[in-house]
Image: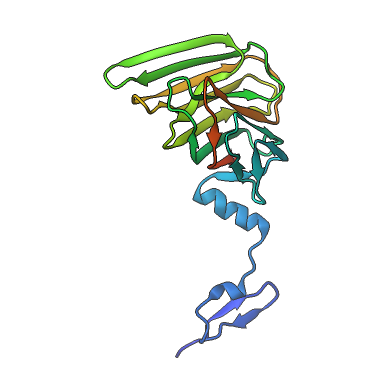
Length: 219
C-alpha cells in the first residue's frame, strides 16, 4: 500500500504535490539557517565596510579599485562580529614592474613605528630572507606587474585590544621572478576598525576587486 508523501509546514502536515520536484517551496530558509549553511560551506563571510577611498564600494561589500591609485583606505571593516580576517585583491594590475613597486599596509590610525616584518623569498635561483623592525607599515604584502596584481593578507585580532598579527603569501616582483611569504606583527594593544593599502616605491594600482572576509567564530 502506497502512502502519500507529506511535509511539516510549521503548523501542520501537508501533502507534497506529485507534480512538484522543487521541495524548497515547502521550506522558507531563515537568516540563521542561511548563516549556518554558509559557515558549513566555507567558514568565511564577506564583510561590508562603511566607506572606501581609492575605490568604489559595492552593495555586497566588494571594493572595485580605482584607476592609477596609490592607496586604498578602508573604514569600518573590523568589528566584534569576527576575530580574524582575510583581505584579497585580485584581477587588477600594477602600473610598474620594478622591484620597488610593492604593496604595504597600515591599521588606520596606527602610523608610528610599531610594525615588524619577516620575509622569506625566492629570487629565481636562491632562497633569501629580509626583515624590518620598528617601521611604520607592514611591507611586502603584495604587488605585481603591468600584467597582474595580487594581495592576500590574513589579520589576527585587529579589532581586539591586543597585538595584531599579519601574514601574507603574495610578495612578488614579477619582472624578475621574486616571490615569497611575509609575517608581521603590530605591537600596540589597541582596537582598530580599518586599514590602508599603499603602493610603495614607484607606480600605482588599477582595477581589480578587493574583498574582506571574516572568519566564522563558531556562532
